[in-house]
Amino acid sequence: MINVILVIHLLIALALVGVILLQRSEGGALGIGGGGGGMMSSRAAGNLLTRTTGILATGFFVTSLTLALMANSRAQPSSIMDQAPATQSAPAAPAAPAAPLSR
Image (tube, rainbow, N blue to C red):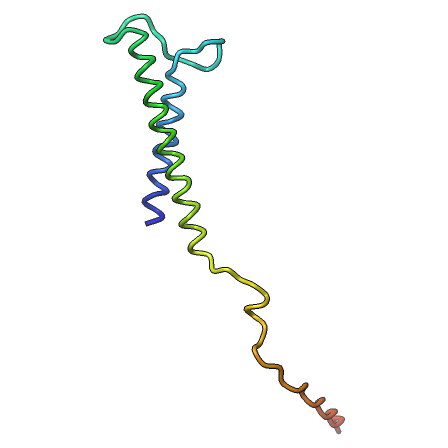
């Protein structure tokens, strides 16, 4: 399930980059859109691209949160208090020294 959401997240990210690059540039940035001719007027195209950017940004935000929550639920909380033994036993007796090897 996490792989499906990750693929959707990556597709939304690529679409978001593409839509942002298509928008008309106000200050000479990387905008490559805004050509004179076409089916839509520049105002309608701007509104459509702005709305599409908002929808894709919302989808990106939702998939980001979903991936973060799924990754968090996978990880088991690990505490040093949970790993401590419940009962304490007496220390083990020291081992007897080994006998020297004879030849």
